[in-house]
Amino acid sequence: MLVLGSVAWLLFIAYVTWSVLLSVLKQKEVTGETIAMSVSVYLLMGLAWGLLYIVLFQIQPDAFNLAGPPTPTRAADVQPLFPTFVYFSLTTLSTIGFGDITPVSLQARYAAVAEGITGQFYLAILVARLVGLQMSRSADRG
Image (tube, rainbow, N blue to C red; front, side, top):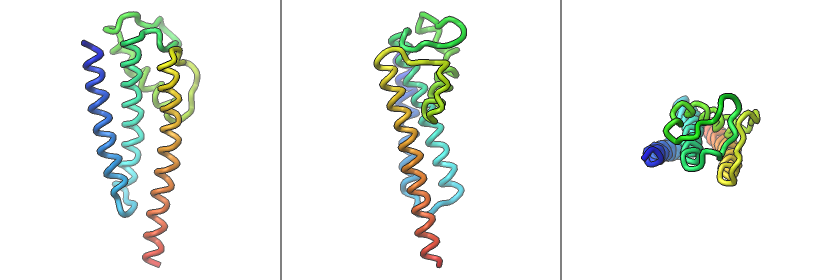
């Protein structure tokens, strides 16, 4: 039952992230709102990946090697780990990867790699798009 709740939250956050991303991509000019929405998408992506890691942990409790206190063995004990998985997600998305939390299972490893690639592509493509919009706006004025 806990897995279904986590999956529902994951789907909700993924939907919100996608909706905000589409709004960013529809912008015709770069404004403060565009920048704020772009940052929001990045943080929401980190939250969504964190929820995916929660789901993986609930299905397979040994999917991650967590530094610090012993890893809970019951899926019901996952709630206190939510900040830990969001932390892992944001360090993976930004490719910092401190190494204090490591994916052990194949699924967790693939998810971490996919998140790292997603973070890099998002930043590269988004910055290129925003710079392109700003340059075309400057050229129109000039």
